Image (cartoon, rainbow, N blue to C red; front, side):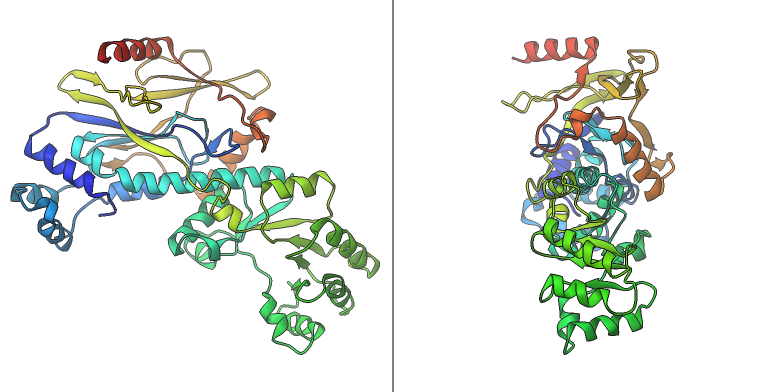
Length: 441
């Protein structure tokens, strides 16, 4: 039922008019968020779980029967929905795969009704998680080896978004999250220090630090900017212990971290890490890192969990092919600025000798590889309603993302400009597009 009304309305019309054949839909991003040159595919595991468990309950069917839009719809349609299960097939780029504008992330083949009604769920989970995984990848790459922790649950657009943002951020390269539910349900490493309220609950900052150390003697992480950051650093350094880390959450992070590092080192605590947070994003981190800031790790919250600069991936889900008997009928949309490419496709990735991505060739799915050594990116996940592909662990997905981003030429990692997508259509697909566009017009 996590669907838009028009999907069920179209399903009723397909059923009533006995529209024949199967359909192929593709989910892709026509263009990318501001300053993004690539995206990291994410959200597939949740999408597959939804498809494999697609069904309607009795109470949901009663709701639909009583809905004003369906008052003239024959009961046979609701009986059809009662027994509905997904019996089609799904291809997708595995999570962690680097993709470019216009390239399919997911392909769904099935009856028109089956393929149509999964649209909204697929878009919401793939769009959101791909956006956050891609944002996290940008942040992690600019940190140049320093750890990044996702800190944004409290600013996420709801509890479920917070959980999925933690998952997507981990895929994107973050070492962990502050979200405890993500640790419990997904096994993602969790991190945290203390809030300013803990320090304020005691009569002095020093007393608060001592109390925290008594409870956590082996992992004393202290927030030192509740009152005065430099005084906080002095208090942390003079406790007679060596704190695991101190956290800065405000102010001029470059100046403060430099001064705090000096205080810690002079007090004999060279192993104490400096952790920084406070409205950070890839641009601020890039500036700090490029200046050689003595910060060991970053906590990134709102800017990551909401991708605040450009908070929506414009992923779309479009019909590209109909199959009726032995006939394959390509379908295109010709709306201004929204033209689509027909047929179910395969993406063939070609690498240069140095191991960098040279180009992606998008071809019709039954075309042979256009070049020797080209690697197909889309893999069959579901066949005839059954899972046929192993679901990888989150750590395996993270590693895929890391390897894929390493294969990107440097211009694609620039956070302030957009590199031209290295994507072209195969001659056969290009010719089909030209013919269809001409014939339809």
